[in-house]
Image (cartoon, rainbow, N blue to C red; front, side):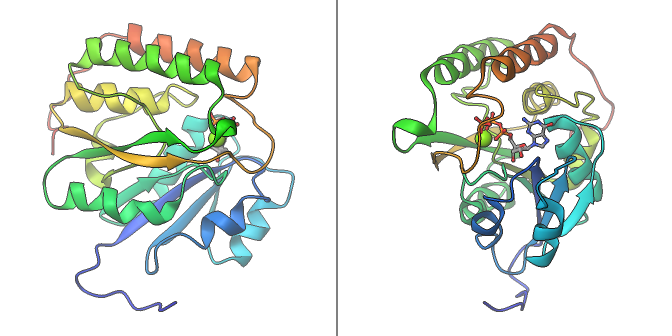
Length: 235
Ligand SMILES: Nc1nc2c(ncn2[C@@H]2O[C@H](COP(=O)(O)OP(=O)(O)OP(=O)(O)O)[C@@H](O)[C@H]2O)c(=O)[nH]1
Ligand SMILES: [Mg+2]
């Protein structure tokens, strides 16, 4: 692996929200593209995730406030690169796929690219989570007019544009709020297929009823919120 960043290689920070993902971290971090920075946002892990991530070369940011959105947003605020990527830290998604997503933003085809999850194997996506996600995607299509099929956590956009969205959700509604506000700001949003693998370690959200219920509650709140018009948010 070379640490040299070639001038044609765009700089990118990969935000990895992390709550007790020590079992998955080695697999995830070794797949972050060479020359890109891994920003692991430790959300109060008690399994040594922060120390492990640091020992594997990642930048570690601490976010004491629990919640997927709190972790993602702390990572966005800590990022410095032109492009920011988001990827779950549970080995369900391969960060090695991110350059293909980034290329779509970089060549000007889209402002935000989402990885559309394509489950690999029976354990990758429980049926209730899949059904819920399909229903959610339908609501998002109706709300935004965007032809989306998934609201996956793997995504890429320009850092300054993401900051301009003024995202406020700090829980499970964060990924949905990002898409809704991007649509309201006139962004072009694209999807790219990505394989979705069974996660490493115990399921916290989609594999549990409590986690799923919380996610649905947070997302309904985002869909009910009135559109926010922000001056200069488009670029
Ligand atoms: N659930 C949850 N995940 C968090 C939090 N903070 C950071 N994360 C990380 O966010 C990513 C997504 O969470 P996951 O638990 O994988 O959520 P999911 O993919 O919907 O569901 P499972 O994989 O079935 O648990 C993982 O890398 C978590 O470690 C938090 O407060 N809650
Ligand atoms: Mg997961």
